[in-house]
Structure formats: C-alpha cells, structure tokens
Length: 333
Image (tube, rainbow, N blue to C red; front, side, top):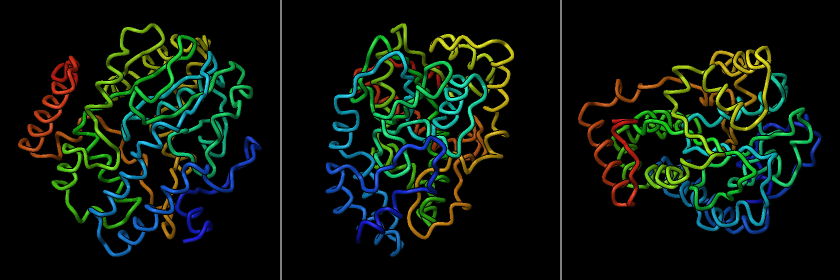
C-alpha cells in the first residue's frame, strides 16, 4: 500500500472554505499504525472477514499511542468548546450546534471539519488543532471534537466541555448500521455479534462504561455540562439555550432561533454531505448513513427484551467495577 492508497482510505472530498493548508500525509507518529494495520483491515474487509476488520479497526481508533499523542502539549483556553462523546451519541449534532452558536446562527461551511478539529483522528481534510479557527467566528469560539476518554482530554478552567451521553442500546443499534455503511457487508455478522463486541470491549469504538465513568467525575465542574441524547431530542431549544449559557456566546433570541433551525435533524439531513466522515477506498460516499433516523429509544424497540436486559446488566456491572457511581438506571435503565 502506498501513500495514495492511505490517502483514499483516510480522506474525504477536499474542501477549502477555510483556506487552510491541509496535510498531505498523516503525522509521523501515526504512520506506523497505518502501515501495519490499515492494509490488513482493508484486506480483511475485501475478504469478508468482518470480525477481523472490526478488531483491526479498534487498533486504529483505540490505539494507546493515538490517545496519548492526540492533544500533545496543546494548551486550551476560553476559545475552545470540547464536544466529548462516545461514538454515535450525537457528536455531529452537537458540533453543529456549537458551530452555529459560535457563528450566531450564520455558520456556513463546505464541511463541518473545516471548522472543527478532531485531534484523535489526525487525517486529511480535518482542520488541524493548531489552526485558530476561532478567529473566524464572531464570538471567538470553536468546537473541538473528541471521542477520547476524559483522562486523555486536556482540562482547563478556561475552556468549556459539553459531554453527550446516549443510551448504550441506541448506541449499539446506531453504530451497527453506521459501520455497515462504512464497510458494506459488516451487518452479515448480525446484531447479536455486534452487541457481544460492544459489551466485551471489542467494538472499534472502545469501552462505553470507561467513557461514561471518566466524564461523570467531571459533572460538578462549573465549565462542564452533561446532556443526554434523549434530553436533546425532547427539548432541543432548551438544550441550545443551556449550551449558549455555558460557553458564553450570549446569543439573542433571534440568533438562538437560527441555531435551532439549522440544528434540527431534517435541516442537517438535507445537507448530510457536509457531515460525512472519512471513508475507505471504493466506497460510494452517497451510500454512507451518518444521520440515519436520529431517534431516541430505538434500541429498545429493535433489540429483544433479553438483549436489552443483557446490555443494561453488563454496563452496570462494568461501571461498578470501575468504581463509578454513575446512576445508570436513572439515565438508561
């Protein structure tokens, strides 16, 4: 595999709205991971060995080196609004809200990652963390996306942190369909095998309990707000108002209404190409399913009662083993 192949695997349609110079290659510390793991993942996918592809995907997304090096020595300040989520928990939704708040409801872009850095996935066409994208917003704010556990995210009293938590049963279902659109055919392993991978920490996206437990410790910090996906669905206007207050953008009622209109599921779905993630080579980007239904509670309606009970029991047991007092039943039981 050459650099061109890797570029296809870890790139998306170029966008120059911000006119930032995009890197032509991954950072040097990321190269060994790509050279040793990415080719094997592609071969496994092409041979239909989807469980092997999942395992190799976890090596890329969950590499300890990536987690430790993602933010490096970056110093956070009042410009930064961290969007901290486990995958498929409302990440792009929250990124859109923050980007629109930062731009007073007038945020226009060719792709969301022209504005929002993603340090834990240093690939082409994602704006670099060091680029001061906040200088291009009237409020001097910008979102930073991360799926990393709290211990790997730099904390500062000056920055703001929005933590979004979603029912793991919904996460399982959403990530299953999303991953199948990235690697067509993956759904052939079946939802039960995907559920097994999730609860046994073999999912490419890492451990849900570890993610929740780490950020739950931050809950009493004044610059941290925890939201649930269900809470956002139930009252998006109220959620946007709380986010506005936390990050200090102080928008007018008219501006908040603009943010709300641009952050509705239907509005984002109509411009889904602006939110699509990097894709493997040979995948038709029009087939990707990032914004599938945006529902809350779908997991309970699709998974069997036995599967739901198994997920709940496992998540509670793992949280307890981590020493976390996260009230699982109050949130997702």
